Image (cartoon, rainbow, N blue to C red; front, side, top):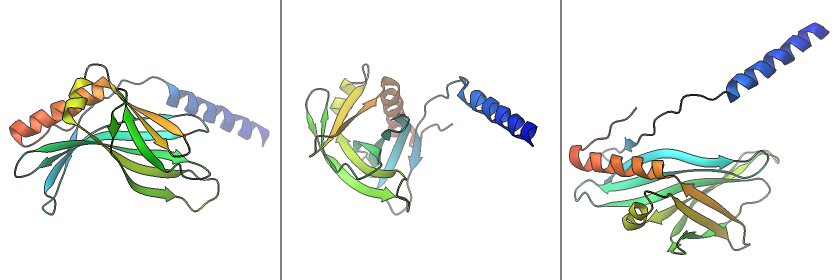
Amino acid sequence: MLPKRRSFAILALMLMLVACAPTEPRPLHTSIATDEFRKTVDIDGPYGGTSSFGGTQTLFRLETRVDKQTHGYVHVLRAAVSFIDRPFNFVYAADDTAEQLRLVRIARERADCAVCDGWEKFQIDISDAALRAHAATGYAIKVSSRDEYSVILTISPAMIATQLAGLEEFLKTGTVASQ
C-alpha cells in the first residue's frame, strides 16, 4: 500500500510542476456581446488580475459599450475582488492622477460555507480621454472602502491597446476579430 501512495504523490508532484511550466503567451483579444434586447454592443476586453496565496484576489476587464444607433461609446472597468470574512464595501475609486472615478456596486456573492471566498463586484466608469492618455504606460486605479482598505487595479498597456483596437475595428466594420 505504501508504494502506491508514494507513486501517487510523485505523480501529483509531477503534474503540479507541469502546470507551473511556462507556456506560450496567448494573444490578447476582444469579443462582442449583444442581442436584440440591448441598445448597446459590448466590446469585452481581456481579463487581468492578481492572486496572492491566501490573500485577496482581483479579476477585472475593460468593457466598451457602443450605442447601436449613434455609435457613441463609454468605457467601464468591471471588477471582482475576493473577501474571506466580510465584504470590503468599496465606495471610492481614483486613478493615478488623483482623479475621482465613479464606482457602481454590482453584486456581492458568497458560497454557502464559512471558509469560502466571497466576491465583491463593481464597475468603474473611465473616460475615453483618460484611457487613451494611459495607453503607453498603463492605468492604475485605487479602489477604497470607508474602512480604508484598498486594492490597486492595474490595466496594462497591452490591455488598453487591445481594447482600443477592438473598438476601432468595430466602428469601421461592425465586428471584431475573435480568437
